[in-house]
Image: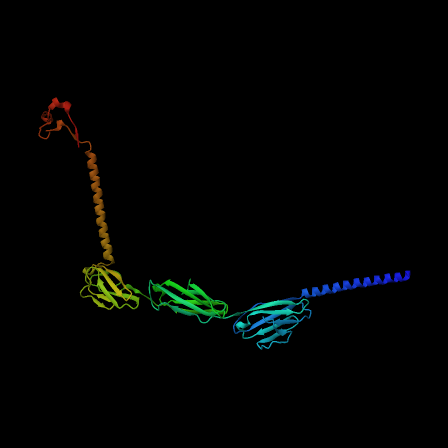
Length: 406
């Protein structure tokens, strides 16, 4: 009995040992399996594709241990299982299949193909990665319109640009020549997940805007350099300048004068006139269109000559001041005149200085001169004694003498 008991104990010990070994082995195998699963990294990328073009979906695995890769559509239907395509859609084509990648192309993409595609790796537990396909729908040709075809300078105009049927919504910016302008935009969603964008641009026009393009630029990820433009037509008052055809420089008596009135306006000025301000144009002057010709000039023709131009927008003028000099008034004559004038001025200044000196000495000399009562009657006396006797009061009034200072 004792021997049987020992044998039983030995058997139980062996069984326990085997159980421990099996548990350790299982734990090691499970840990290895878990390590193997975690070491496999499944990757997929999001895709943006223009409607009608081709999208490529790539399921990639790092450190694959021969686990199976498959691709599912947004409805979780299998598109490809390894290199086999169960789905009956010929637009899906296998591009590459290996232990580390399953790459599939989808041609002629439409809006219905948009969604989340699933890359699946058959491990324990299975792994999944997601590729979101976004379908871009480019807008139609932008439509640009203006409130009026012809604008007068100083008035405000409005131009509208519309971009229709895009996904996502487009953005619109404005350029006038090489300068960017700010407009106001409105976005409207349509029933088919499309967007229509309308932008308004308002600004005050000047004559410099005439024939300048205003450009509506549509910015969208599906298109580049998509734009429409409209040329402004601006009406403005005439611009008037006067050109002296001849003579050049000083104008002297006996010479001839020709002036040309240069006019620019939109619309073209329908009337150009020459007038003389505050007087009549000389009777023998010849006016031919925008030209004024006067021969045999004299000083009586001096004055302001005005060219007046007008169109449907308004009237503008420019002035020319005519000053006719003596016939001999050349550069040397001018220098001579200047010398004469300078000499006269010098003589006048010298005379004034001399007068000031004489007056100064005169007042200084007579500053102490005075007359007394004794001096009265001195002019009629024959000598000094008689003059003293003839003075009022004589010696008797000597105490009442008064002095008068001049």
